[in-house]
Every structure is written in C-alpha cells, then in structure tokens.
Image (cartoon, rainbow, N blue to C red; front, side, top):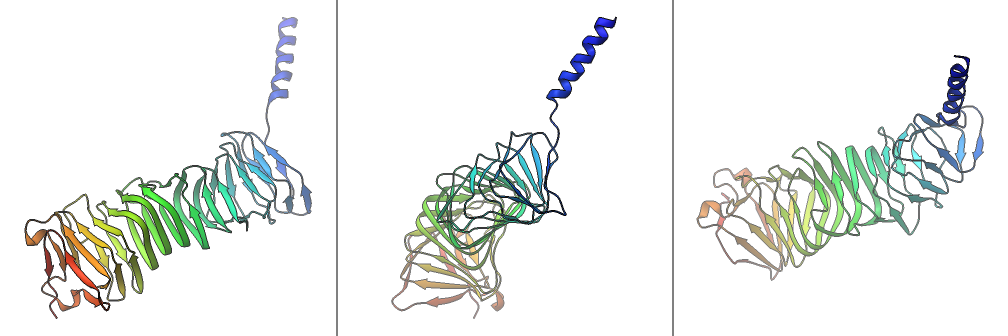
Length: 351
C-alpha cells in the first residue's frame, strides 16, 4: 500500500510538472518592455502597460489570449490558429509581420495594420472589428468575417491573390476607401441570405466573371466596377444604391441581373441622386426581367441592352408606367447611344 501511495504521489508530481498554466505579461500600473512573448493554454493576458517590442506567438489552435496593452506591437506575430481577444485597439507597428492563420475577436475594437508598401495577410478569421489598412494588403489565405466587420482602406489596395473574402451567416462586411483587385468567381461572398456586403467609395477590379449568389450588396458613395467579365447579381435579396451615390460600370463590363427568384425589382435606386453610370458597357437580364425606377441612368459611349425576354413583361423596363415619381431619369452624354441586341426594352416613364 505504501509503495502504491508513493507511486501516486510521484505521478501527481509529474502531472503537475507538465500542466500548462495561463500566463499574464505586464501590469496595469508599471510600464515594461517585453521581448518575444509566448503563450499556450487558455486565458492568457497581455496587460495595459506592457510594450511588446519583439512580437508574440500563440502555441496552437487551443491557445487564447486577451490583448489589453496601450502600446503598438512590433516584431513577428505568429498565431498558429490561436485566438486573440481585444480589450484595446490593436495597433501594429511598421516592423510587424504576420505568420500563420488565427482568429481575432475584436469585441468592437479596432485593428490598424502597419504603414508598409505591402502586407501579406494570412487566412485570418475576424469577428466584430474595424480594420484599418496602412498599405497594400495581399491575401495569403481565405479571410472569414463573423459579426460586424468594417475594412477602412484609407485609399490603399487589396490584392485578392486567388483567395476569398467569406462573410459568415448573418454577418455584415463594410468595405470603404479601397481598390480591390483580382476579383473573379465568387471570391467575395456571403454564406447565407442574411449576409451583407457594403461597398463605399470602392474601385472593384475584376479579372474574370464574378457572381453574388447569397446575401446582398449596398452601395454608397462612388463605386467603380472595372476590369473584364460579368458582374452577376444572382441572389434573392434587394441591393440598394443609396442617395447621392453612384455605380460606374466601365468599358467592357457587363452587369447581369440573374436573381434566383422571379422578381425584376431587386436593384433598388433610392431617388434621382442614385446614379447608375454605364460607359461602353452592357446591361443584361434573364427572362425574369429588370425594372429600374426612381434613380438616374447615365449613358456614355455605346451602351448595350440584352435580355432573354420573349415577351415585353420579361424585358428591361425603365419606370413603372403609372407613377411619375418612379420614372427613371436618363442622362445621355454627347455621341452616346443605346443599342438593344436581344429581348425587349420597355420605356415606361410617365413624364
């Protein structure tokens, strides 16, 4: 019995030796300059007056850490799939490099990327956070968004680099002040019908056909769609072009209205200050048809209308034929033209 008890005692000591405890670095009263910080296990903490000058690392996907420091972080940051919870704004200095994917739960705080020419962004998951870009951002993995996300580009670029922006169930992604290049397929997408993608003052550059199959778009400010291919709206939700906002469809692009339900009025123009500007581009509708009301359509160069309509009711319709307030205002630039290549076009403005 004594030998057995002694064995249990030694086993207890061994287990204690291998038990991993949460680590707290820094304090809320005394300033400290930290070297590389390494965290494992759960419920680790980075406290207010700790300056992390050599970066930090999370051991694996089960590691969690709370960030509550007042200072920018420098050095290499490695997530290894772990989760960082923000209790302060998370500011990255110009020396930061991000390694491996992870999860950043912003808890409605903000994250500022470094002011560098190019930042490689691994396949992170972001939740309830405002992201500020400091330079060109190149994706090196699929990025997932949960909750309410804002990307403020501050005039910089995002290179999709063959990877995806995924808006999770019921989530919203607002992108503003940025040029997004290399878009095709369904690289920027919603996982369900409640997802929202808001574009505000965005230049959207395609290198192939693109489609949105779930969720919806909202457009604010100046949104330019350019590059090559088709921009297809295939969802069953309303897309809204806000007041004093403009979508410009540039030369060679096609806007395809191809909703998954039989509704020809899912593209909503709020009022006459909502402008769809078409420059040497094409407006296409399936046999569902497309009705545009209330807003303004600018025609510049040769604009082509195409549809799969076999009767007028399935065609592309301007106005609703009954209410002057629902007329679609037309602004035709000098030497511009509208050409109907297929289907039906119905001019139903009252005034």
